[in-house]
Length: 331
Image (cartoon, rainbow, N blue to C red; front, side, top):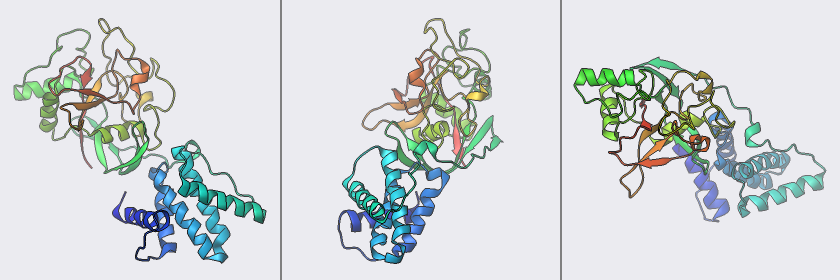
């Protein structure tokens, strides 16, 4: 979210929620700016749209000739906030009560605000580039992050279409003389097109630097997985199945699959194999702990752990057969 939008939101909160005296601005123009921002597809699930609703409500009382229009817009954005958060807030509830009473008294019918999953989002333009393997473009903008579905904004970036494979990691080891990873020779994990496993955080970072990339943040990884609509899995809301992910296999005898065999399970940006097969390192550190966030679930996990909003933690020196990685770079 850009600084101008943040400043407008702060203005609305201070003046109309906290009751603080502030330097006046052109509130009609501010409403238009807020509404334009929250009407964009990438911001369609941002609950901060409430500030557009509050400001339209207040303008409805000040500009009588536009009261019906402004109250309609206030109702839309305030109800949208409620639908996105599922929470009660006096600053919203009281205004909606007044708006609904106004329309009832005037005998005006107002269409119901669409719920978040009914909003038509602009189609995602998928862009693929080649840089030590295919990479997919993830555009800048906000998305719904974590189980709390908190609106978070990230800059545009590229992310590997697939996890780093045994074939790619072998090229790195042979070119640099770096040690081959743990589990390298085990039949369950050695398919050249399966994700490399048994790599520590340092191993993953060394490979990333060799190809001129880096490990993703948890936010980057999750946006690449869930798009902007807060979906549970890369493919949508349907539970995991064998044709969508590698999971629920025997920990002692099961193993990983090639990364490129389930294109129908890709994310909105065309990123594949984000759910199941292997957990993936991120460079996000858990505050006050010496562990890093890992994402995605693995071949022996139950389907519920494959959700994009799930996170586990791993110590930097861990070299498990369940953890691999993929890389990102700035757009």
